[in-house]
Structure formats: structure tokens, C-alpha cells
View 1 (cartoon, rainbow, N blue to C red):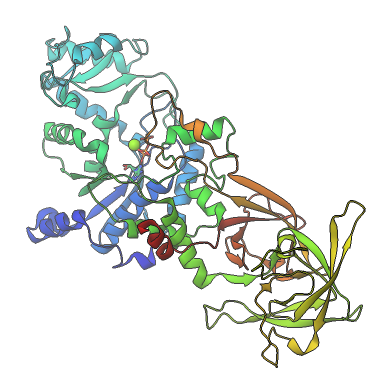
View 2 (view 1 turned 180 degrees about the vertical axis):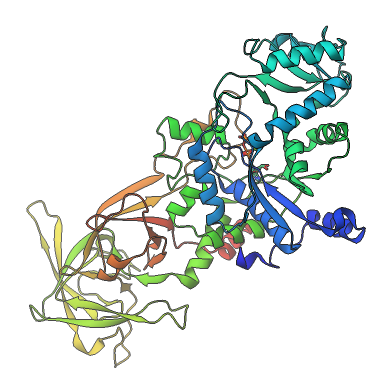
Length: 565
Ligand code: ATP
Ligand code: MG
């Protein structure tokens, strides 16, 4: 993450680390990890966690691990492992040779469980899940002890071994820690360490039929890898006492420090993996990488760059307080970057024919266009100009209102980088529809300026009929219509707020010829239309498909002003 170096703004976690370093804690080492469960694709919230964990390791010249938290065989798949590795790498976080799987530690978790059992701190419980839940009670009322709670360590070890050997059915027994059934923290009321599952595991096959619960496994994973700071989202704050308790039960092992931060939430967006999975499974979206999805692969396909996503994650900062980030800010971050880097091109999305009647038939010439007015080294390109052109249908009005500065009968406008033209007539079909606009051009205005300083108010983009490249263009909008998707009323479902216009596909667009050479992932500004990128799935040389990453409207600064009123 080259440009993260020194740029990850300091935050409360770094203040904690600075203090620790001053006191010589962890011998000055900083070691973080990103621990995804391979049960879905990564989303922009995960990018925040990756940026924080990797950025922190870089800042303190420490290490960063990628670890798959693959402790639940039922929901995990190798496809997710593959996509997560690809996305983390694409974001620029480098785990070097430290790629780990929690399932590789199953033997160790098993040894640790036996330590607890022998110490009388864990027991096999044959109560039903409902009974366990009822006995746990409510935070305001002490729980009830299980009838299996005070069985002997020998007895429990025997039962645990039988559980492991597959002698019991799924759901008929669990191993629980013996902690405190009266604790106001429900997580401490004899949490479950292991449950039985006979589903094969994606890496372990049917070697195991007991699987560790998240809380039991996670701290040990961190400990075994020598993680010093286990950074996680706020919902784990109440789990921290348990995280610490488990590690304290096993003598002599490394004790990482868990620090919680607020998860990322974005307006008009859902970031729950369960919901994103449902959108995919029910074909509401085209897949995990649908450009409307807040997934890393969706954002990539939409035209976001790793640097823009990192910049977003760095700018929103890290805090302990839950908050909602404006969707427009994510768009601002990519716009801000593409404004400086994207080459300008001309693309007519809804073409109408224009004929320059005083331009010789069969003649063509090149006009010079700058690639990026924001970039002094952006260079220029040559674009062909001929008698037969296309412009946008809505850049012409036969009977324009006042202050319509584009083309209309008798009106003169500039064709960007080319000539001034004046509309002289229109051609209509039987139904009265305009099929062609007739214009004359002023040969003295080549390059888009008139020697007599004649002013025109409108400047239009255009493409020649002979050289224009056909393409499909997809315009995207927010997937949901409700601003705060976390705030649903009773009886409302998040799917009630799907935006029916989140995807508009326009076929029959024409692009200037240079766009035939567009590289995957290269963002372009289509003049007056927004920023676009080649679709990395559906585009082919004989059927170009471009996705709109983001429109050209409102900068963040303007938006802020508007919001302030
Ligand atoms: P679930 O656990 O419900 O499947 P998850 O989004 O928490 O979903 P994990 O694979 O457990 O998925 O997440 C990996 C890491 O990413 C965790 O450390 C988690 O805290 C962090 N993370 C997840 N969502 C966000 C978010 N919205 N903002 C910041 N970090 C997040
Ligand atoms: Mg999680």
C-alpha cells in the first residue's frame, strides 16, 4: 500500500500503541491481522479493516497476517477464499508469507480444551439448545446452572472424547466453559466452546466432527500467530472479557490485546454479508461483483481503484463511535482521483445524426484534442472529423426555451476541439420525428476558437458516423432508496427499498475510435457524461461495454455547502 506509508492518519488505536511502545510492551513489536470468515465476498467495510490493520503494520514497521477464520464448515467455500485473497491483494495489502487458516490450529484448540476440562473449567452439556438458552436467562436476572455443570473432569474428558469420536448426534451435546452464570455479561455465562457438526470442512474434510465457536477460537488464533493488536469491530466489545479469560486459562501463551473500533456504515447501502448473499442468491443482483454491490469486486468492476478506496478509508478515520458515512463521500473519493488521472474522451450515448452540408463529402481531417486539461503531461490525441457526425439527441431542441445554450435552428455552437457549427434545418420522418440535423460549419474556427472572438455559449461533444465505435453503456445508481438502511421500521424488509432504476443499460451508443484501445481498469472521463471503465466481464472487442463509475455532478465541497444550506 505504497501511498499509505505515513499517510494513515493517527487515531486512538495508534495512541494506544504509542503508549505501549514507550513502556516496552511486546518488545516494540506491532503485528496485526485481517481475519475474514470465508463465507462471502469482501465489502467496503472490510476494506476499512484491511486499511487499518495493514496501514498500522506499515506505520510501525510491523507485520500483517491474512488469516481465514474457517471454523464453520457449513457456510464456507473455497470460492470465497480465492476471491478474498484476490481482493486483499488488489487493495495493496501484502501478507508476505503469512497466510493462515484457523482450521490448521484445530489440534491446538483441542489440546487447550482438554486443559480446561482437566482443570474443571469446561463440561459437556447434553441439554438441548433451547434449554441452554433458557437457563442462560436475561442480563438483568442471574442464569440457572446446567445439571451437567458440576460433573467430574474425568467424566467430562470421557464425554468430550466421545463427542470428538462422532458418538453423538449433531445438536445433542456441546462443550461449555464453566465461568459465571450470574455475570451481567451474557457472554460469560458458560459459553459454548465446541458444537457437533458432521458437515465436511473445506480443508479438513471429515477429520473433525466438533467445531470450535468463534470466541473460543479467535483469541487463540491471534495468540498462536503472535498478533499484538487484535483490531475488531465494536460488536466484540462485550466479548473482550471472554477473549481475555480464554487466553488466561492456558498457561504461558502470548496474550494479544483486543481493541474495538466502529464499523463502517454507508448511506443507501447494506453491508451485512447475510443480506449481500441473499441479493446474489435470489438474483436481485447479477453476482457478488455486480457493479451496484458495495463489494470490493463490485467496486472494481464499477471502476473504483485501490487507491481511491484506500483514500476513502483513510479519510473517514477510525473511532469508537458508530456513524454513517455519506455515500456521496465514497463517490467523491473516486471522482477526485479520476479528475486528475482519467483521460478525456468523447462518447455519444443517445446519438442523433448531424450533417455538415458545406463540408466536402468524402473528406476527413484530424483535430487535436488534449487528453486531460488537469494533467500538464496528459498529452494530446488526434480525432477524425468528417461531414457526417453524431451528437447527443438532447443537445438539440427545435423549439428551445430561453437560456438553452445548445443547438437549435439558427443557433451557433462549438463542437469540442473542432469547429463552430450553425443549425440550418432538420430532416423528419413521416411521424414527425427528427432524424437528422443539418448544419454549416465555419472553416475559420478550427480547434474550437473563432479568430473574430465570436462567442458561443454551448460546447458539444461529437463522434463521426464513419469512425464511431458502437458500444453498450451501463449507468448505475444507488441500489437502495432509503438513506439509513440500518433503521428499518417494524415489518419493513431491506428489500422493500430496492431502487428499480439502479441499472440503466443503453445500447447503441457511439464512442470515439480511441476507446477501442481502452485497457481493463483504466478510467476515462466521457466528456459531460461522467467517468467510465470497460466492464471486466461482459465487454468484448466486438461488443464493447462501459460502466459508469460515477457522474460528474457535485464535488464534495459543493455538496457540503448544499447540506449546510
Ligand atoms: P459476519 O461475521 O457476519 O459473517 P463480517 O462482515 O463480520 O460478517 P468477517 O469475515 O467476520 O465478516 O469480517 C472480517 C473482519 O472485517 C472482522 O475483523 C470484522 O470486524 C471486519 N469488518 C466487518 N465488517 C466491517 C465494517 N462494516 N467495518 C469495518 N470492519 C468490518
Ligand atoms: Mg464477523
